[in-house]
Length: 580
Image 1 (cartoon, one colour):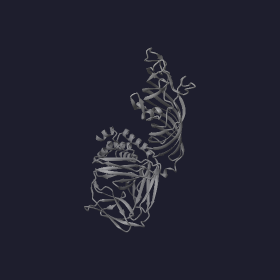
Image 2 (cartoon, helix red, strand yellow; image 1 turned 180 degrees about the horizontal axis):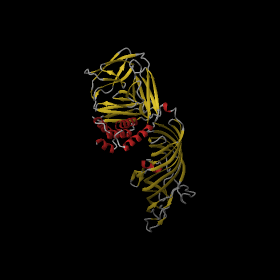
Image 3 (cartoon, one colour; image 1 turned 45 degrees about the horizontal axis):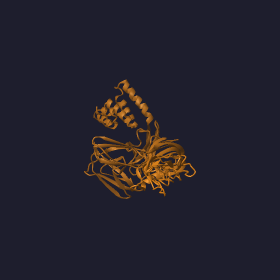
Image 4 (cartoon, helix red, strand yellow; image 1 turned 90 degrees about the vertical axis):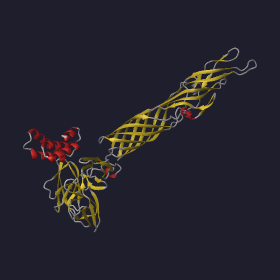
């Protein structure tokens, strides 16, 4: 009943443990059918097939027609997911271990049923070098493995004892070779050694190094192993280590102590895996590990086919400053009527955006050349303290709230080179170089104050009057080419062979040429003040006896102010990539 509840929650590992415990206590058709379902959900197809076959053999005569039909149907479907390995050896009498599990001695009574995929086959016999092979089995396929064992030309001796003198089975590299105390000749190098007794009694795998013409003694202490561990690596020929001890290649299943264990998995051309896991008493822990391919490894280059790809990109564009004269004023001082003050009252550069598409061609593994076409938009605004120029009787005028805005909207084209490494979680490094055709718009508006002073003459004394005016000078919209260059780094996830998505950030430097802000009215376009940002001031009432009124003349904002200067953009973006 616990198994049924766990299965309803899709906790297949734990449910399988409960159904197996039920079968051990009393074999029954319900527990066997449920265990087969769990094995199938866990993709342990060969074991599911064996469980269904055992169910029909034991209870085929008593189960209902519907139950029998369901089991027959499951067996038919599972045949597409399993194959067989038939192993023989010269000489015979050698122990066969497939994916870490012993299957008896040659000649085997029947072929071993396995999942479709790659499997590790070991064949060993005392006095001979061990035979090991990786076998790729397709669904419904039967593969034959013929192992020719060569006598040991160089060997050493291993003596295995149990600390308390108990007689337990000795497993060398997964194959049972005898009872403790056991002594035999082995090939040189490291070997995995474990003891197994009745019930849970045994030892975790230990490492023993055999040296030529020497006897290596290994004393192990057997104790209850109250947890079970199953490790399923991908690729299936990966080398598996438990607590620093190599236990062979491929799937491994065995009993361990309930405690923390360090699991390491390694395979050529893949990024090594390491993790500390905790096993619980009375439970089975299943660890499935799919190693990431290391695309920098030459082994992947042979099967590589150059191909085009397409990316869609979109995200933010952020800059601390567009680098123009208005922004630079924030780092300067201005002489106000009361003395020197900072050049800015406030400054902001809200996030813009970057969108586009990139077409590329991967000509070598991980190496690509690309063309990007897109559009980005940026803006900045400041509230400045400014000294402007008036005509001779006015001199200078001052504003502490000139609102300056600058926007850059730019279709962009760029070439880039990229390098992509790792497969499941690709990391991409890229270098951009290109140009934008930027449209730059600028505005200004502020309140200015000054003093009109008339010159003294023989008839009259000098007189003065205050000037206060709100000034906003229309400016010319500029279209300029801006070169850009910069690096980019991205981290992503591959959903399928062709489709992946990633998140990254580019830092793009822009190098505009001279782009002075100019007026766009009759005053700015006039022959004497071409390009100046000028406006007409209101009339002024002087403080003389007649309250004389005078024209305030023109006000001209600072000259030779570039709208933008050298600046950089930080662009965090999302991208989706399709490889063809």
